[in-house]
Image (tube, helix red, strand yellow):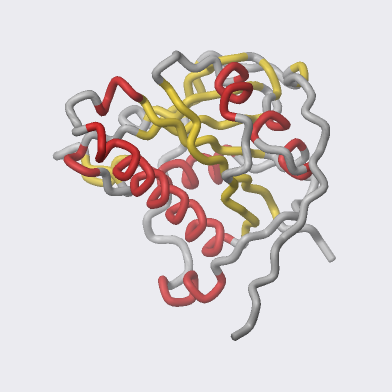
Amino acid sequence: MTELQRIEYEPAPLLPPAPASGEAQEFISLPRPHLDGGAPLMTVLAHRKSTRTYADSALTLNTIGELLWAADGINRPESGGHTAPSAHGIHEIDIYAALPLGVYRYEPALHHLVLKHRVDARNMTGYQDFVAKAPLDLVYVLRGSQVLDTPPQQRELFAGIAAGAICQNVSLYCASEGLATVVRGWINRRLLADALRLNEDEIPLLAQTVGKLPVN
């Protein structure tokens, strides 16, 4: 049996959030996704992988809009259905986007970003050095108030499944569009919650870095 190779990291120093760069708007309207684009599903699955090196270039607003819609956007407006499944349709996972100009929360119903904190919190989304350099770090946050009616023994399981589905949606979109991404669980949840300005009942579960592939 082949022994799995363990990925070793040199932890980057945990520094406070950096000052935001650029003008942060209170709301950012996102372009609607082009539903007739993208690579065939089997091709996308063949190219899905984790990447930890990124080009030093920003993502366009069109790309961010399509990425977040793919992650957990509304794909059935008549029923409010999302692209990612959620047990009992409670949709307890919020997506936060750490950008150079600030921390934003994605609102699927309106397909826009809402400013939460005018800081560059990318370096707070993990211990690896690349998280502060990539153009976008997504954080998947469990909204505790949304799961109060769910039996306690099922809350963590259901939230993990929902966050995993969102992660995979992002990974497949990145594979389709030739972007780089990696899902990360090595985060300081308390410090990250402070950087994102979360309430006490909101818990960061996972982070996912997205950017352009480096040019060889």
